[in-house]
Image 1 (cartoon, rainbow, N blue to C red):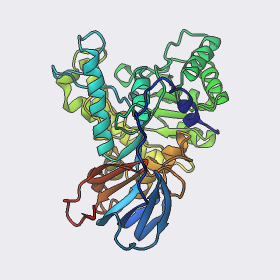
Image 2: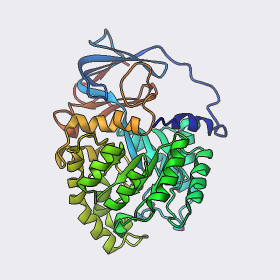
Image 3: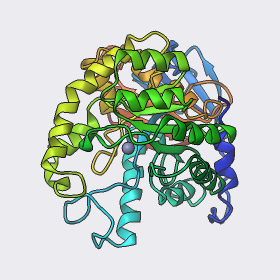
Image 4: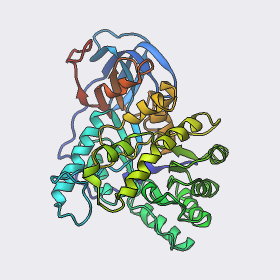
Length: 417
Ligand SMILES: [Zn+2]
């Protein structure tokens, strides 16, 4: 499909105040690293990326004279992308997951979202898809135009989950979101994993939604756990399926044939709930039974990812479903994918960069190191191809040519300014 969500969100932002005076752009910036991964599987040793005006100008296959930043012990790669977060979800002052009606003030919610943005960007994630909350619109717009530091955000606003809606009503719901500036459409084809994950919307309902989204060039992303719900979403031509804890090999093969992107979670979302149970217990479907379901899901999820990796032609995205308490830990699923599910480190990194960019329709803007793309660049200490845990040692984060993190004190790295 030819998705153009970037164009849509630029059009939707007129009401957000911009800076009072534009910053003068400086001259070119050069970043040297021991190795550069281009996000599409390529590796260059001892290379320098040159950035100008917020864009990647070129890559030099050597250490240039007096680079602006240098990382002789580091690996430079495109900013990471998390295809599934809930950027506004937070743990409140009382140590509980924020839920509507709990008395938290709008300021607490907004400041918590800002803290989530900071943690996410500092972890090397320069783009996130935040799927499932109408407040994400303001968060996205204030990052884009209102001066709030954070990753680029694509959002679906509220999900469409009411299985009682007719096909026409579903199409209208999709149009309403797109007209309001949604970059993505989020659908629920199954129940939550805490409620068994069985199918809710029919294939016809999903087809109505996914056809309408495609007609507007917007990716439709479907929450589905049971094999039946995944099958329906794939046959309905939906763009991407999330979760898939109960995926069978037959449904993975079908998705590969249909070209459906698959975004399963390895560990973070489950561990965050299970290891911090008192923050969630008793809220909504976070019951004893719900926690037991999540405990059982962990080995199933690992097995599904292992099977997905081995399925020829299946397009495997990278999304963590980062929720309250998990922001900034977005790289942990890469470690899980490599160590628990057997994915090659390079493939996990490519999933979190160029594959995700294509899945979200933003590959002409970010997701690889290529002249003309946004200067979304990060450096991690060490070599993630040898030790995937390097994804947790991000020492430099640039988004659109602006440096948001630089830790020159970490071993072997030095900055000249
Ligand atoms: Zn989610």
